[in-house]
Image 1 (tube, rainbow, N blue to C red):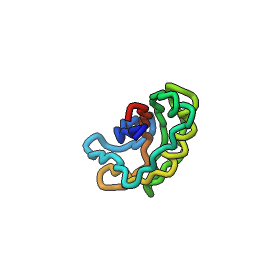
Image 2: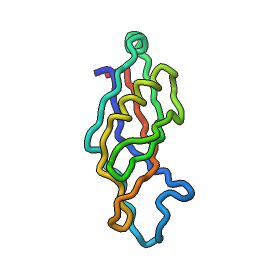
Image 3: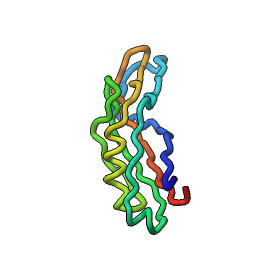
Image 4: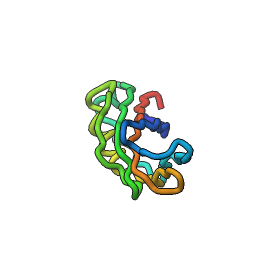
Length: 114
């Protein structure tokens, strides 16, 4: 296998995101369906590895919305990572038992050694 996708999800909570009382526990969104990105053929052939950080919102239905590349180690990895993450599905986040939208960062790693 030429790539590996890490399902490490970092929560990024900004001003106005998930406003609520401090005593309300936050349950992070959990991926229930992931899609592996297509490895760009030229980079695969040249055994180039890299990572793309995608920032997006997981809405109250568990859909990925507003995906954007935060940073990438190689420009050709950006589009396949965006396309793949845009098709993911999550169990939505909850705060105090209520389903909420949340902004997260998802690192997508391409590993040519596999």
